[in-house]
Length: 158
Image 1 (cartoon, one colour):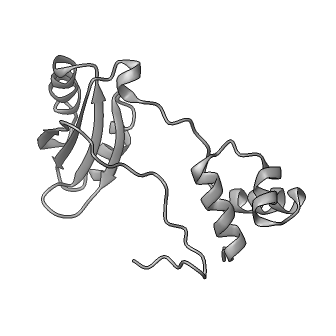
Image 2: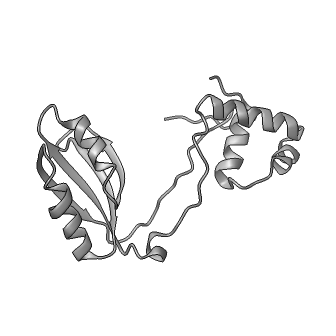
Image 3: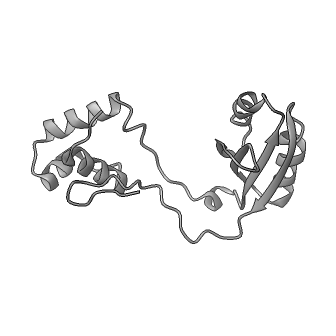
């Protein structure tokens, strides 16, 4: 799907606040609410917009520790491992990667004991597991889930 400047501006506004009414988007971009609604539906159908969510502070719900985990798995077992990892509570992100680690993950746990249990009792016991490295996150100084959608006036340049 080809996105024009208007689509990109709608995406920018929705990323800032997914609860913004279509009427407010329409007002800001000087377009009718019906047209905004049609454009959003088109972007949802095309898979450009993949969902809407509330961003929750992990610590506020008792998840006091997070870590980045690199996994090495037996050759040919990567896809199976990726699928099984997504079923483990506490595993938040799973990525197939190049380099030293076959899989990189972000995990959350209540505390250090729960992290140890997650790593040793669940992940390390999986068929195909070879080895891992766990890097506990001590603090996060920057995290951004807003993608740079750009416009013709402000193009995104990688």
